[in-house]
Image 1 (cartoon, rainbow, N blue to C red):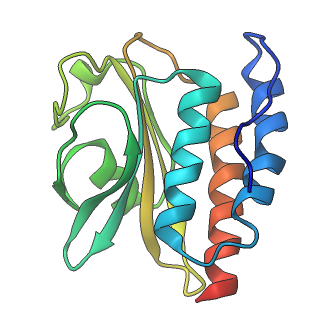
Image 2: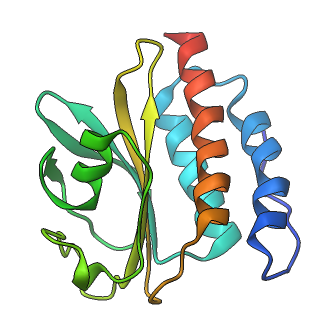
Length: 165
């Protein structure tokens, strides 16, 4: 059982993603519980990057419902046609929002959130079963480096979920 994660003290996010991805894979590799795996992935991302908020929303019925997260209180339910999470869910694409105030229909779960990135997670059937939502208290904090790094981490989670489903 891992008790900590190791990563370089650098501002180069590409390096940090490359270092934590195999650790997340090792951490969740033997665990069959999706919620436990999502919780540990959120914790690693929060620790490695210090993001304001990191968490998962799971598809339940006709909404996205709050799952494991690290950070302040969060919105509990999000309709598929609302906010950045709903947009990522319905478009099935990663969404980077440099300034949440400029995103039409943004859901302000916290006024401290300034920028956001949301990455969909896909099941074996190709359907979105969750989204990874990361918020920053800094404007324009996310780039394609984050999109690529978070997508890789989501693929690790997807592969683990497919192997236990």
